[in-house]
Length: 608
Ligand code: AHR
Image (cartoon, rainbow, N blue to C red; front, side, top):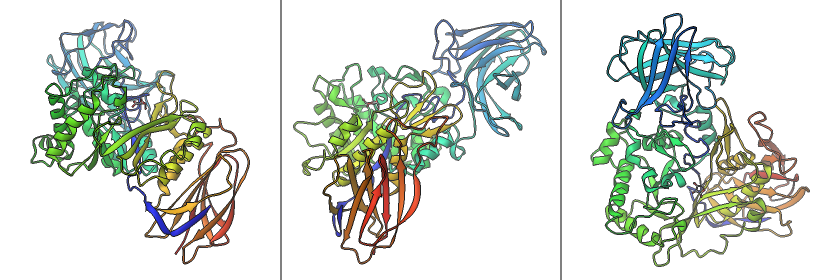
């Protein structure tokens, strides 16, 4: 590999690597969103019962439960769970239990914030809320909620554990000690969250994303933006404000979304990671093929997108900026890119070109220069600012396609690789996939004059049985812990070691399974040489640096090595494949470096 350091070919896009997210694989509910109560609003009726809830009565107490479609705590939640307690006393209470998302994470010396909406038909005395160990029936934490009344009211409680063993084999139990009727809804329990946000996120998963050094979050999808049907789209206005005012909605991935992760929570997630939002707005097409005709029928959807943009980016003097301020966030959020729809190449009606243009004209009329507008399908007559390309491939296909963008016309739209992944291994990918990913990323870095952003998908998976709808994901978890796939570590290496410019370079003589990219940080002179050896044999690399005043004699080396392509990390073996940092003595401007078989490496070189 021969590198000419004083002749940068182009700058590296400052927003190159980011994140893409949607509700899939229990990404939020049962994932990032820290809520512990599953089916908290009883929207999921299950098969003949109430999914994830069970009746519980001690001794000779008696109780039954059913959905009451005639009463609920808000306009959005018009039904609730009715628990009819036939017999109960203080020693023999009755009530319901919630199993959580494949259990509930209960840790020692931890305070959990709970709340519920309730009403009764009689004086039932106080309600007891407890965390119970599934295995022993032992109470791990408990609190009483007094003052239940005959009209709907919200009640808060806290549960604090002592010096217990951590466990996810636990459930929430709600009981009373008197006969009568008890209605409950919007039952919630939160552990401590990342940066102590109310209604916030799991710290372990947030920390993993921070490690990737992302520059943006593309939200809220993906298919999740579109919904299966127009009425099941991500209707952002129904996802803001108090959770009790959110009606929840079906996600296209087969389960009801609590919408606890609403638009403002998405934005707070970007704020916590200090990254930009790439805001995808619903553009009038849903997955089962329905579309809204461009023109007057589409106009309300365009207006809705304009309101959404104002909610996200407007100051408090604007109508929707003021709504956001009232919800506790006066400062606008940083947005440079707005995406019009998702994967509209699936729209066989051919309406996308006109739909894109209608959104484009309206957004540019209000914001002439503020935003770059991303198209999700190629357009015939109109040049979009940016085009979103998606790639889901096998590793071999990525190896063969690494030069994909080398010859793409630079006069066309900029490119957002808004979804990409090597699909090998599951529920999280294996080392073979990491090699495919790393090879593909070398191509994206080399073409980062054209590619302004790129984001892997999907990001998350709950690895419990039934948690996964899409095989091949980056970060896996259960209720208690999370881990990164080898692909996750490949991404952290590419995200953490990225310069500001791409020097000119050439390479000769490598195998067809050898890939590299090089970037240089103009301020520090550091050169980041990324090397991918996707064959099982060792690879010797002769490196020659020209155009530097001097080259330091010690290189920092980060290595991710697999012993075979199927090797991977799992929940029980989360650190099997991890990047390892060492130092390497080098001869100077010309040196030889040897890579192990199946390896991804970054050489950090100091130059002046
Ligand atoms: O990432 C999974 C899905 O793949 C996304 O929802 C969709 O945009 C794509 O087809």
